[in-house]
Image 1 (spheres, rainbow, N blue to C red):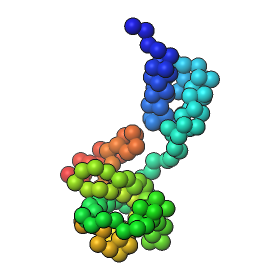
Image 2 (cartoon, helix red, strand yellow; image 1 turned 90 degrees about the vertical axis):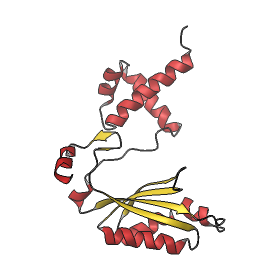
Image 3 (cartoon, rainbow, N blue to C red; image 1 turned 120 degrees about the horizontal axis):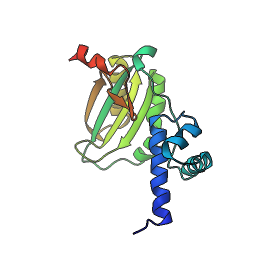
Image 4 (cartoon, rainbow, N blue to C red; image 1 turned 90 degrees about the horizontal axis):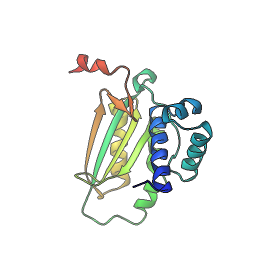
Length: 175
């Protein structure tokens, strides 16, 4: 059975998106060639993905250590108490980012999740002292609403945002 036009467009869009994930800075002509599409088709598909907010933005992947930072993961489990009025508003307003900025770090990812924890935040900070300060500040900002916080420090990325780390072989020196 022949694919519908909608199915074909969706497949083509995913093909283009996969190429963008490999290197969003890649030349449109190169992406078109890899996908087997015209330059115009790729350009139009990218613009449509941006308009539909399928693509939220573009970013650079960098080595935190080369800029004097470390990468951390913070996992939060909320307590069984009902959230106070304004808690979700503080989260949505990105108050956590303001706090992290005051401490001297940057938030990379913040997500509400299903599982043993309810929230996770990935961020860059100078050291474990800054990371712990951020953790303590969140506890103070949400008294009685957080049951448990686990703080992890990333030692080495093997793959980050779909891209293999060119220094991933350093794992042999770590383990």
